[in-house]
Length: 130
Image 1: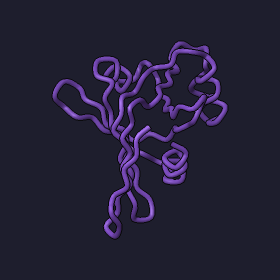
Image 2: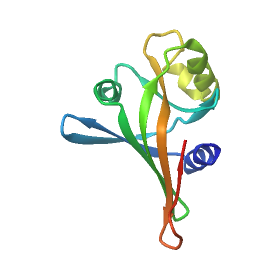
Image 3: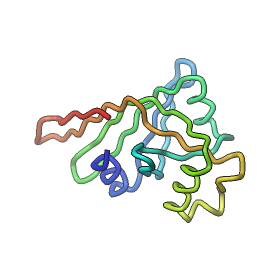
């Protein structure tokens, strides 16, 4: 899990794929954070991504850096407690202009049943679960 978090942070941007009906939806994200032994992402409840995950929590994350790409298949589970929201926003203080752990909009979700694959053109894929 630490390797995944470090890779995504160093890549700077990752792409989150969700489903809306039978249509895949992909968008760039930047937040990734470990809290209480879980890997979290953050979004806003008013966004379509939040609504899509409420209907179908299955998602994939993809990031690319230095010729290596990471793919994470998982279920994203909402954690509505204030503590993980505060921890996420403390880790990304630049988001505090748009989000607050008490605003009713900030949403954090942790990765459940994650299957992680690191791939490149020059090495065999490495697969992990957490």
